[in-house]
Image (cartoon, rainbow, N blue to C red; front, side, top):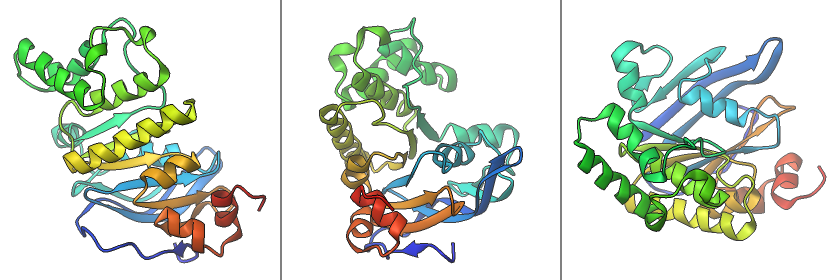
Length: 261
């Protein structure tokens, strides 16, 4: 991190809910990144950005316990993700929500049934109570009228919203979103961005968002880190709008201004 360009964050919460210290990750002989350290504060929309192949999605998977780090330490909600096992690990995973790039909904189930699934698996709520909760979550993302439709019957933007609703089912304090705007037209993407900001404000939920979509980064990000493939690590950190306007790093400037480096 010593070489990273850092823009000081605005005053706000100081409670850390995600902490990565000296993280390295890769596959086989290929090293994606090393010595990656950062913190995510409660209630913020934190964006992980960078060009293709820099390791954004791998870093997300590392934080939610799917890909182990080669080095370093990851703590989520005061729990060491990779040093915790058994029921304690499952308890941690129940406290985070994840929305994958394609929504990852079960095609044979309605949106309501998809959102009910985490409730059926992890709570003792009666079926009617599960349905009520699922309808509330669908309402939060603007899909009340689509509750009984199948994933194949709705648009790509609605699939993303349904994925967020399912991620919210257990009221997790943190949501991890993988490329939420990928494949969406600009208007639909802007609507999804507004929804994320509204949910963060209304629920106090922390969002960790992986994306390379510039418009979304600037619309939703309270703070960000930028990974770089050549540097194999973080090259900038801070408010994305300030990085766009103030950065002196040619790679950062090129990304935010859509210029050749």
